[in-house]
Image (cartoon, rainbow, N blue to C red; front, side, top):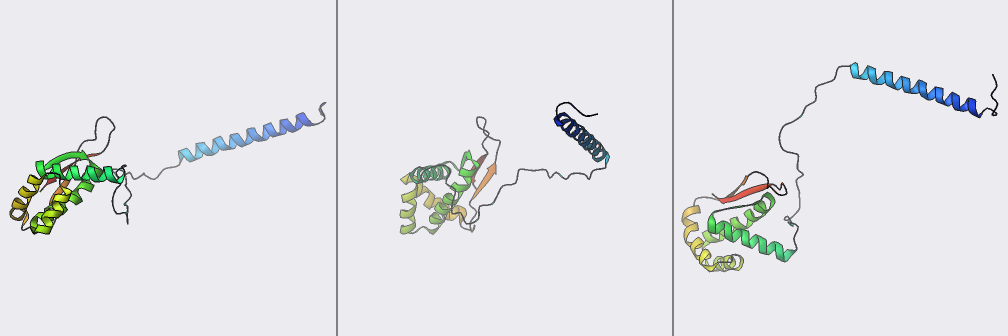
Length: 167
């Protein structure tokens, strides 16, 4: 029967009926796809994937250059003094390079190496002690003087923590 509003209502009704049919089809498709067997999903256990930073010289550690240098010098000094320090994992991995370098200088033992070590390590007596002990302790080892162990995350901010220790 013809509508009284000039056909606008019948057009709205046709659209409504069409959408109802489409939603019915969509519901039927969802029901069919849920009943199909699924392939088992493969979840690989372990830590999240981290990107490898190729061609990056060093980590900036979120600090300006002067603060970063002071931090790495302090971590290097305390690691050589105590033999083991606990810090964040990224800082431990960065400080490892400098600790290994200082031990290499201690193994070399010449005057230039001693002056280079004194320019980096804060404690003069620590440099002398390192130069006395490094050749005997690490004489047969060609690198790999430190190890970084992962520990539990830090309580306050859940930062990854690690232990940097001399081997």
